[in-house]
Length: 514
Image (cartoon, rainbow, N blue to C red; front, side, top):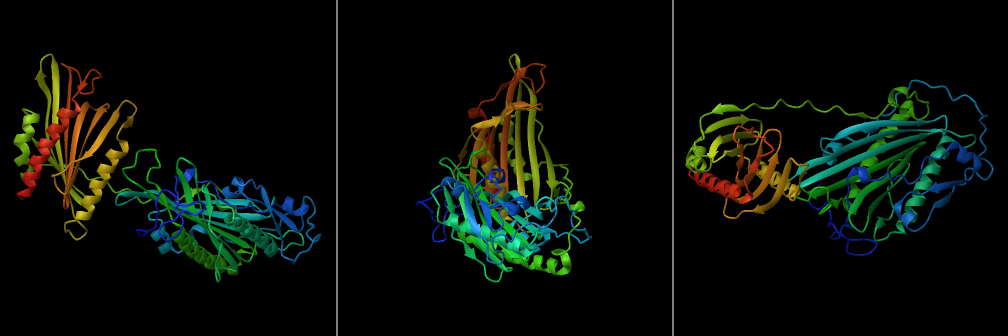
């Protein structure tokens, strides 16, 4: 997704809010908020019996609902006239014999390079709707989805959905005619929606796609309510013989530091990008479907037993083993900052560990005293400094990797600011700090987990390819009580942040002398 894929969050004009010159702004939402946006359901065999030459199109497009439209009607092409659609199959007649023709893999229909570009590290889910006996069609479905991947200061979500529906003949209605009827109904619904856009529900003009299958079109939709953006996507529908192809492409992003459970700053794919990408996907799928049809898949009934089970997620890569920290001597920068750290964690024994992974080397220095005397109380003070150095694949310094890590840490704090998890964790306001590294922030939080109860001041700073995080823990508890005692009195924000800031400045001076 290029830098202009997402438009501004809020519309600027009724009926077609703009993104520069690219088209309407597109709201986005979590995929679970996105309704299945099929314009018409596959035509049931019972419906075709009752109406030989008119097909009711149940329009679920939000625009139609908004205008009070309940149904649209499509007059079929003149190949079959009134009265010629009577079903010749006797009630209870046996279904056509099944042969072992492999069903299509809808997930393999788009090119792999396209999927990797549009939906990085996608998880694939497959499903089959076999309605051949009851309604004369079978649908193979694939969803390729990644709802949470990092891109600089944004979290992105993307998905591609592919549906392939193969229609059977119905009496004197050939399979080709049934598929054409369905395609016509979808096209008519799309053209109706484009003339009934509102501020809350926008539908683009239908874009026909010459050369894609035997006939095809694409359209773009977004919808929102008065309080939040909901969803946006591009949809493409095409036909190859008696197979109707439906493709949907969704893309959205939101700043990492947006408040948790909010839609603040959410953006969706623009009209221009959605139509371009969904048209390309549809073209690739149409070519693959034609190849499968030419191999006999479209004409020979399929034994779909193996593919009609519950959706199957794609295999995920095995998780790489976690690197284990190794004890090391106190590194130079921590030795330089140690006198300052010991002012806040008196009589602590400095310790250091190092962890190496493919992208970075992490050193953690610790000064911890669990049992300082504090009158009738036992006082815990701990200063922890994490120095993470990023390198690329050839071992050179990687400022971009460090910046991404810094952005992620800052965004997490801002997202959680003013909220928490039950009574265990609570984050207070995150504040940027000037005059410390390339960028820095500070934040206070409270921790009441089974491990320790403490108030924690955190300062994180970016220095080119290095991210330095200082955390100052503290609490007073009854003597003899464990560190997670419910009677602990947590160190306050002012004291903890002052200590963390003092050590962070000492670390800054130490790094400057390297």
